[in-house]
Image 1 (cartoon, helix red, strand yellow):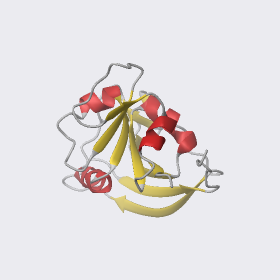
Image 2 (image 1 turned 135 degrees about the horizontal axis):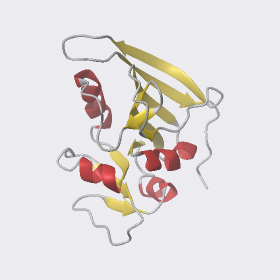
Image 3 (image 1 turned 180 degrees about the vertical axis):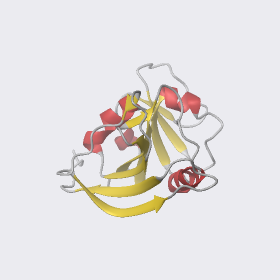
Image 4 (image 1 turned 90 degrees about the horizontal axis):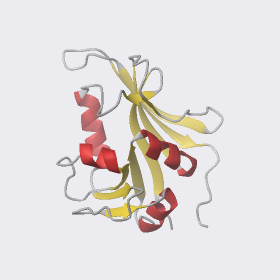
Length: 171
């Protein structure tokens, strides 16, 4: 038995997740979706993303921090040196959710089963890119839109996609 690997991200219309640090949007409905989706799950993220998110983790979260530093210590969770190591640690879980950053998304994409992408209708023009999503590899299975309103300065769509040819990660 192995965990399903899901990548969850908010991505600009031109493919960026950030212009350097943090999320460049304040989208309350997307934030609520993100919190609900990640509740009580094991989470894969890079060290910088982990540092930016300190104080955010809730009971039930189990962070796996992908780092090159073998001495990196967490108060709660585990440091890992690779995506396959994270998948091995999480094998008894139903799902491992990758939260980024850009390098971690790139490393995790070949192992991913599901994508949960918030496509923000804004062009950033530069920054940290999310991996290209190939229509030959990914099939959208659900889509939800959010228009402009008093709380949302940008329209966005949350799309869940499944890998068309499922991966054999038993090895």
